[in-house]
Amino acid sequence: AHPVETKRMANKSVSCRPWTGSAVLFLQSLCPGVNLLSLYKDSKGKFIVFKVIKLTLSDSAGGLAGYEILKVHDADPFLGVEIKFLDVSTCQQFLESYSSGTVRQSLSQHGCRLLALPQEITVQTQLKASTHTLDLYLDQMELCLQQIHLSQPERLCDEEIEHLEQQLQSQAFNHAQQSLPHTQEESVPVNAFKFQNREFRSNADTNRCSKFSNGVGRNWKFVGRALGKNCRALKGPAIDNLAYEYEREGLYEQAYQLMNRFMQAEGREAKLSRLVKALEDCKLMSLAENILEIHP
Image (cartoon, rainbow, N blue to C red; front, side):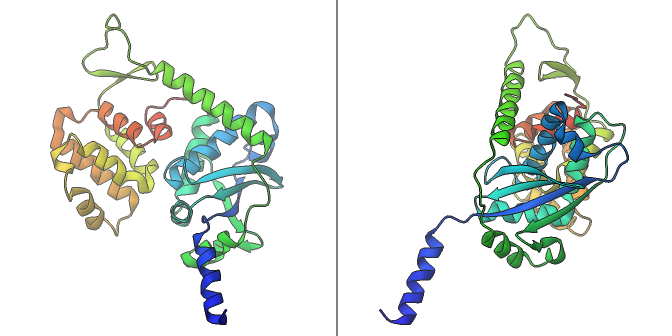
């Protein structure tokens, strides 16, 4: 075969393969008394730290699909999390979240809530693909994706991780069972709603709007569209218009203005229960728990 044709065939065979790659996320708490590595080595702390990592990845990669945790290991003073990416779009969304600081923000918020700390923790992070430190060129997306793609995972999912994943699924199932519709005998006040078998007031106050804006990150558009199913002010191009109008102010302001628009348009009907339902529809259960201050 002609050399050029041979090269084309080789490129075609490579492009037909599923896109995969791996990276290691290194984590270290900078707060005195909170050592993520020590906590992970503790039998009780291991599951909590794993859940913090899992929820952070779900927030920053847009859900539970497109990646998997292969191993969590000792990289003293860091805790190393080896991640396998199963498609390029998920990997890109994670890199964008990492670059914007959303990953550190999620780690801090989930860590504070699940470890029952009085304030959010400061987490130092580093991202590597093989020997390449990606933090040095996060502004070059294609190069980062290329390095992650070239760093193919050398292992299958660790048995310890499989066990932790099963624990997490079991916990989620139990929560789902508690959230099933209740009988008519259980009366809920008009100005309240039930979530995970607990009763909450429906008022969407400023503090909860702020928590939503702080934690939702790039997912605010998805939540906006979920709210827009029953809110005329958020239908059509409204979400994209908000994104454009407040692009310079950043994600927090875009999310805050979304809630502001929702509350102004719906008035008394802008209930917290509707926001929680939208978060459930978007698979952002951890954010709903954070807004409602539900601790494990």
